[in-house]
Amino acid sequence: MRNSKMMVKLVKVTSSKDPLLAQVSWLYEMSFPDIARIDSQRFLSLIDNHPEITFNVITVDDEFAGMAVMWDLGEYRYFEYFAMVPSLRNQGVGAQVLKALREESDLPIVGEAEPPVSPLQKRRMAFYERNGFHVELENPEILNGYHSDNILYFLSTKPLDDVDRCQRLIISKVYGVMHG
Image (cartoon, rainbow, N blue to C red; front, side, top):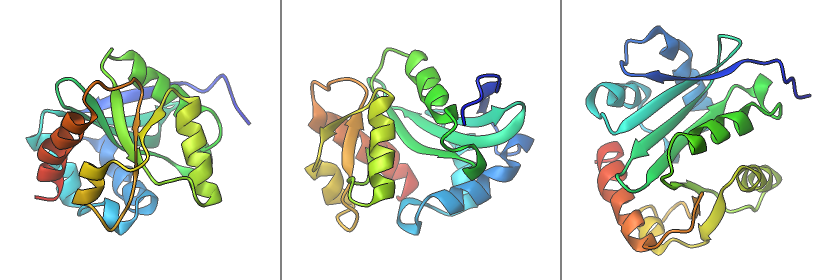
């Protein structure tokens, strides 16, 4: 049930010592498979060492509700992680967060998602499409060539002029830091 009285905030975290991060590790580990994660401590340390990362803690009525992690790639913003605490899913909070992120900048937001095969994956893809994303490529060969054991769709909030360039930027700027 949606509650329009919930106060949703995105709080930009600039230090891995921020107390708002206390609950991020369990949500990160619960929400993403091993193949999509790095060590939690290393993940949080990226906040201190990479100013191109915007780490948002999501709060609802001043309580921890989730996280949204974006990378500034110059002409694109890469949406790497988005997770809500289970008790707040399907209540419109995620839609409010995506709307706020889209309104922060005119730059396209790009990201990856699993192909819509299982019921959960179909719901996730429908959620992104309802909230301003479209499938830019069903088989982004450059990105999928980098992580060939995990085929993903490539999503964007706006049509991209040079999809290959965008994929290469993600590999060099994001994957190079996360998995290098």
